[in-house]
Length: 140
Image (cartoon, rainbow, N blue to C red):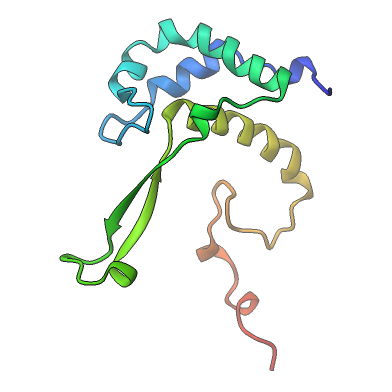
Protein backbone atom coordinates (compact mmCIF):
# COMPACT_ATOMS: atom_id res chain seq x y z
CA UNK A 1 0.00 0.00 0.00
CA UNK A 2 1.22 3.48 -0.91
CA UNK A 3 1.87 5.61 2.17
CA UNK A 4 4.30 8.47 2.65
CA UNK A 5 5.12 10.92 5.40
CA UNK A 6 3.29 13.60 3.35
CA UNK A 7 0.03 11.77 4.11
CA UNK A 8 0.34 12.29 7.85
CA UNK A 9 -2.16 14.49 9.62
CA UNK A 10 -0.64 16.64 12.34
CA UNK A 11 -2.61 17.23 15.56
CA UNK A 12 -2.17 20.99 15.13
CA UNK A 13 -4.12 20.89 11.85
CA UNK A 14 -6.99 19.04 13.53
CA UNK A 15 -6.93 21.45 16.46
CA UNK A 16 -7.22 24.45 14.13
CA UNK A 17 -10.17 22.91 12.28
CA UNK A 18 -11.96 21.90 15.46
CA UNK A 19 -11.46 25.38 16.94
CA UNK A 20 -13.38 26.85 13.97
CA UNK A 21 -16.44 24.61 14.26
CA UNK A 22 -19.67 26.58 14.10
CA UNK A 23 -21.71 26.00 17.20
CA UNK A 24 -25.11 26.70 15.61
CA UNK A 25 -24.72 23.81 13.14
CA UNK A 26 -26.49 20.57 13.98
CA UNK A 27 -24.37 17.67 15.22
CA UNK A 28 -24.36 14.53 13.12
CA UNK A 29 -25.80 11.12 13.95
CA UNK A 30 -22.96 10.45 16.38
CA UNK A 31 -24.47 13.04 18.74
CA UNK A 32 -21.14 14.70 19.55
CA UNK A 33 -21.95 18.32 20.38
CA UNK A 34 -20.03 20.92 18.39
CA UNK A 35 -19.25 22.89 21.55
CA UNK A 36 -17.46 19.84 22.98
CA UNK A 37 -15.24 19.42 19.93
CA UNK A 38 -14.48 23.14 19.81
CA UNK A 39 -13.85 23.66 23.52
CA UNK A 40 -11.75 20.51 23.93
CA UNK A 41 -9.93 20.71 20.59
CA UNK A 42 -6.51 20.85 22.26
CA UNK A 43 -7.24 17.62 24.16
CA UNK A 44 -8.93 15.54 21.44
CA UNK A 45 -6.61 16.52 18.57
CA UNK A 46 -3.89 13.98 19.51
CA UNK A 47 -6.16 10.90 19.64
CA UNK A 48 -7.99 12.06 16.52
CA UNK A 49 -4.69 12.43 14.65
CA UNK A 50 -3.82 8.85 15.62
CA UNK A 51 -7.22 7.60 14.40
CA UNK A 52 -7.08 9.60 11.16
CA UNK A 53 -3.52 8.48 10.39
CA UNK A 54 -4.38 4.84 11.13
CA UNK A 55 -7.36 5.18 8.79
CA UNK A 56 -5.11 6.45 6.00
CA UNK A 57 -2.43 3.85 6.68
CA UNK A 58 -4.88 0.93 6.75
CA UNK A 59 -7.20 2.23 4.04
CA UNK A 60 -10.21 1.87 6.32
CA UNK A 61 -12.81 4.51 7.14
CA UNK A 62 -14.95 3.73 10.23
CA UNK A 63 -18.53 2.79 9.40
CA UNK A 64 -19.94 5.13 12.04
CA UNK A 65 -18.34 8.07 10.20
CA UNK A 66 -20.09 7.01 6.98
CA UNK A 67 -23.54 7.24 8.55
CA UNK A 68 -25.81 10.16 7.84
CA UNK A 69 -29.06 11.42 9.23
CA UNK A 70 -31.31 12.68 6.44
CA UNK A 71 -33.55 15.56 7.45
CA UNK A 72 -36.24 17.13 5.25
CA UNK A 73 -35.83 20.90 4.95
CA UNK A 74 -38.67 22.95 3.47
CA UNK A 75 -37.98 24.96 0.33
CA UNK A 76 -41.14 26.97 0.92
CA UNK A 77 -43.03 27.94 4.06
CA UNK A 78 -45.33 26.23 4.70
CA UNK A 79 -44.58 23.19 2.54
CA UNK A 80 -47.67 21.79 0.82
CA UNK A 81 -46.08 19.02 -1.25
CA UNK A 82 -43.53 16.47 -0.09
CA UNK A 83 -42.09 15.99 -3.59
CA UNK A 84 -41.87 19.66 -4.55
CA UNK A 85 -41.39 21.63 -1.34
CA UNK A 86 -38.93 19.55 0.69
CA UNK A 87 -35.28 18.84 0.05
CA UNK A 88 -33.21 16.22 1.85
CA UNK A 89 -30.21 17.40 3.86
CA UNK A 90 -27.71 14.84 5.15
CA UNK A 91 -26.26 15.51 8.58
CA UNK A 92 -22.84 13.87 8.72
CA UNK A 93 -20.62 13.29 11.74
CA UNK A 94 -18.40 16.34 12.34
CA UNK A 95 -15.32 14.14 12.75
CA UNK A 96 -15.80 12.70 9.26
CA UNK A 97 -16.22 16.20 7.81
CA UNK A 98 -12.97 17.31 9.45
CA UNK A 99 -11.19 14.27 7.98
CA UNK A 100 -12.78 14.90 4.58
CA UNK A 101 -11.64 18.54 4.55
CA UNK A 102 -8.03 17.55 5.25
CA UNK A 103 -7.93 14.83 2.60
CA UNK A 104 -9.82 17.08 0.15
CA UNK A 105 -7.16 19.77 0.53
CA UNK A 106 -4.47 17.18 -0.26
CA UNK A 107 -6.27 16.12 -3.43
CA UNK A 108 -6.89 19.68 -4.57
CA UNK A 109 -3.26 20.65 -4.03
CA UNK A 110 -2.21 17.80 -6.30
CA UNK A 111 -4.97 18.23 -8.90
CA UNK A 112 -5.12 22.04 -9.07
CA UNK A 113 -2.31 22.46 -11.65
CA UNK A 114 -3.96 19.98 -14.02
CA UNK A 115 -7.51 21.36 -13.81
CA UNK A 116 -8.89 23.21 -16.82
CA UNK A 117 -9.30 26.98 -16.45
CA UNK A 118 -12.96 26.51 -17.37
CA UNK A 119 -13.48 24.43 -14.23
CA UNK A 120 -15.20 26.79 -11.79
CA UNK A 121 -17.19 24.61 -9.39
CA UNK A 122 -15.57 23.23 -6.22
CA UNK A 123 -12.53 25.48 -6.46
CA UNK A 124 -11.40 28.19 -4.08
CA UNK A 125 -12.15 31.77 -5.07
CA UNK A 126 -14.16 30.51 -8.06
CA UNK A 127 -17.81 29.90 -8.62
CA UNK A 128 -20.01 28.88 -11.50
CA UNK A 129 -21.16 32.51 -11.38
CA UNK A 130 -17.65 33.47 -12.59
CA UNK A 131 -17.89 31.18 -15.62
CA UNK A 132 -18.26 33.03 -18.91
CA UNK A 133 -21.86 33.03 -20.18
CA UNK A 134 -20.83 31.65 -23.59
CA UNK A 135 -19.72 28.43 -21.92
CA UNK A 136 -23.37 27.72 -21.11
CA UNK A 137 -24.94 28.84 -24.39
CA UNK A 138 -25.69 26.04 -26.86
CA UNK A 139 -23.95 26.12 -30.21
CA UNK A 140 -26.21 27.51 -33.01
